Amino acid sequence: MKIPYKNIFEVLRINRFIVLVTVGCATLTCLFSVLMTIKMYRESQNNAFVVGTEGDVVPLKVVRQRENFEVEALSHLERFHNCFYNLDGNNYKKQIEKALWLSNSSVSNLFQQKQVEGVYNRLLQYSLVQRVIKIESHVETESEPYPFKTVIIFQINRGTTTDSYELISSGNLIQVERNFPYNPHGLLITDYFENTLRKLEDYENSEE
Image (cartoon, rainbow, N blue to C red; front, side, top):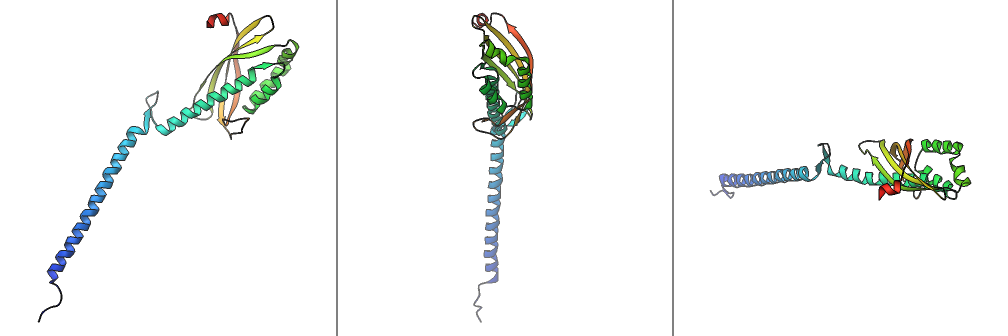
């Protein structure tokens, strides 16, 4: 009597072939995935990191963030020093108000101290014009709070004479919420201190 089913050995052979093909395809897929992962990892190692100034390896994204932060920090410091030291008898109140938005009580205390010393009264009494000529700042951006040091050159015009001065200030920067237009960079100056002030002789001639 004929058996209506295929030979059992033939069926097993076909099943074995299908299993082997499936396993082979899965293995090739896994190998391809591993190779692509290794390739992407190596490319990321080559492109996503840079060597810092002290030889340390820093992620490129972090470097870009630091570069952007440094630009904003320097702009913030320039804005503050221009507001706090670019003064005359007509604008000093508005200028100081702008500077106070960019700083904490350390600047407010300094402002009050200058008021007691009669700095702003002299601006009014003698029609003095204090003009910032140059601002150079350095900020350490490794960790918050961010220490800074700024050198300001400013001139005081007394009508017939103009005197030049160099002021070195220092402090820290911390990050706060941005507040347009008062504090667009979202930074706040803390621990502000005027370190040294000296008169410059023949500053204009020395710059030429």
